[in-house]
Amino acid sequence: MQDWLAKLQTPNFSRRPSKMIGNLDPTEKKVTVIGAGISGLLIAHALKKNGFEVQVLEATHRAGGLIRTERTESGIAERAAHSILVTPEVKAFFEELGVPLMAVRKKSRARFIYRDGKMRRMPLRFSEIFRTLICFFSRPKLIFRPESGSLQEWGECYLGHSATRFLLSPFISGIFATAPERLFAKLAFPGLVPKSNQVSLFHHFRVRPKAKRAAMMAPNEGMESLVTALCSSLKQELKLNSPITELPQTGNVILTVPSSALSKLIKKDDLFSSEKLLQVQYAPLISMTCFFESSAFKAPPKGVGVLVPRGEGLRLLGCLFNSSQFPNRANNQQHSLTIMYGGTEDQGVLALTDEEITRLMNHEIGILLKSTEDACSVLISRYERAIPLYSHELHEAHEALRKGFCSRPGKLIFSNFSKEVSIRGLINTTLQL
Image 1: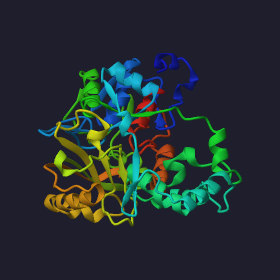
Image 2: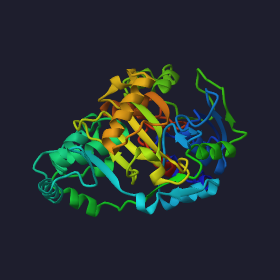
Image 3: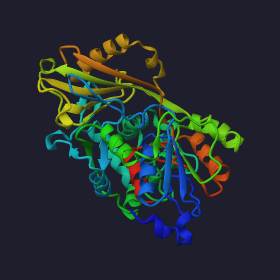
Image 4: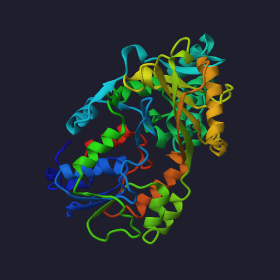
């Protein structure tokens, strides 16, 4: 991480990483961070490390937001994020915090997509693979408009219909819990969008900077150990049970709260942006950590997990094979799975009772993994607003904030809706400060 104190002496200090909205005021050393979710903790930790006087205000009784690790009789159960893609820089960050990581088992790195009643590592048929390669290496026949195009339109243009349905759609559903037609391509995945319609996707990837290699890893004791380490580094700065109704008028202010809470906080200062934030949509989600006895499976699930495209006869979005990926996620005689339901295309699933969703899960795991017994233990987490949709409405909110509330130094937005939804991305952003 570069030295912030050195940046204070240069006019380039106002250049903040592009994953944030707004700029810090270089003449102010005090920073108030509103919200102690993972983004608030990460940026507060980075600023404190680089010499700023930081205060973190959290309205609730605990920090970490949705990230929470439960220790059950059957094993570790995650309420939200289960793992993280780790670059060398991110690995060094965890080491610095004293949070040991473990990699996915070498024999458990396979990823599957469910099609025609089977889990497949490659869900496309030979003819579909051939057509996808033609699309990938050729100039697009369809016109994709980057200023307005959805991920669905991007996929149809650069990959073709089959790859969009059976590769892109389940991938997007696994990240955003929505369909690709609901996402603005340039906002959700700007690196995928070529600058010109006259070049192939192959050419675009060949000339753009290569992405750093990342490996899927998880903290040994669960994702909440990252929250615990960050809270430990911010003992004096973190104040829980500290709700605010008005923003501080002095020093830098960094807001890391959800869009609806941000809308209320800035309403007096910027009514237009406040109203735009109310239009930002979120995908609902149910995450179920389920433990099965070993006897439930003739062949225990191996690999990272499986994603399920819509229209394949199952209601679940995907299933992670926790105890296949990592050790100590379940007792020796049990298997741990995380099953996800909901998303924007199946919001009605949240109306199911715990008994109903558990019965549905047991039935579909029987179909998907050929289990012969019901789960012996189930932990259900429900989120009506789990993941922000990187849609045109969010893009308009970004632009309004940039021209309004965040137009002057000293006001900055950093959250999972400010251009980076993943924990890895949030960490990388703070490492650039």
